Length: 118
Image 1 (tube, one colour):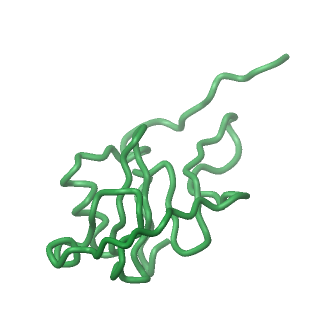
Image 2 (tube, rainbow, N blue to C red):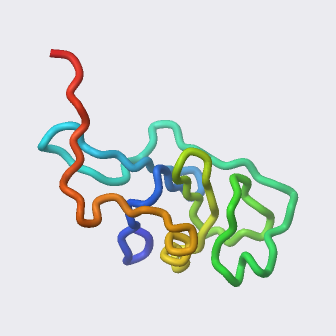
């Protein structure tokens, strides 16, 4: 949850500060799906470049470096193979819509991974 809002299952990884979570799906009929804490948090590197006023107004910017002046409450999100952004909690829907990021679980049956071993 971000504030009082549940985070959509659109991102493979989400983080803020020194904490990050990965989106995981159960491999059996039982268990939980959702964001789970990473044992080794992913902390994006910082940059000396300043975040633009346009990015602050929009509520997000695409990239994998924490820009100077990025508000402390913004989240680092990663999706697809190589897409990442920093986003304000109230701009998550805009980011998802602007980049057509699929939300897992909407209208889908529970995902099952193939069982390994015997």
